[in-house]
Length: 395
View (tube, rainbow, N blue to C red):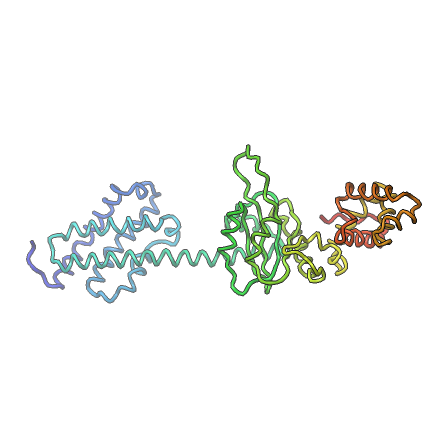
């Protein structure tokens, strides 16, 4: 046991040892930590600076224990910012442990107060390291949230630039293939984590943005990596239904599917237009498809809805058979009465039934249903107004 020293003598002795302790620490890091050996020289040097700063900071702290709040700045301030991205918290704690072990071994025969000080300091430096990484994670989370809001805003406005793909990649977007946009009312307390957990459970990825009182979610499916998988992709409407509890009260509208995230603006425009007029559909489901709101959207002046009605319903019927188009006009004008339609057309009611079936096969809408009849009636109106020139296919 070395003879007892005063605190000032111990401080002087520690200062003479600091260089030796730094050298021994770097050697021990090289011997015991494979990840340190595999680092490029520049980063290895930065890690070494942190270890040396830890020893110097301990000596300063031993002189004035009230300096605990400055530990993080003293030790980690010497490291470049990118070190936090290349060295994990676990590796940092391993670094602290090796450094403390080297110092403990060198002073093991010193006063008990010095050994206790090393233990206390190691605890404080470990907490300081955790705090540094926690702050870095919080800052990254805030940055990701701002970046996500920027991407969602670009999708809603359709104003893309060359940096959008890199921004999407930075967010870790895992969606592949088709994308759909869901628009509803933002709740008073938005639980983003719950929405993301639900999406992951449904094998989907989401981008979430709040635009005033609206909550916008861009949905993409996460395809199975197994090329032999026979599992059918989950419908977007089903995914939207599972996400519905995360929205506030009010209408919820799902835009049509588009081939990729870079084309999501078209789905967003349809969803926003549908959300704006959803109150006009008294029994609108939640969520409702934007395409089921085509009549309301067209009446409100949505050019996308008008062109969709013309190119999906009116034009195919006109090109296929004017007889089918005329039958549909008569059937809807006569209040969906088979007998009245048959009398006007001078045919048998079974002929009207057959033609209605053919209409359903051609365009996929059943004129005998109340809601679909409204959609078909709107298509006939806007198609007739548009006249003979073919409408531009906006979808």
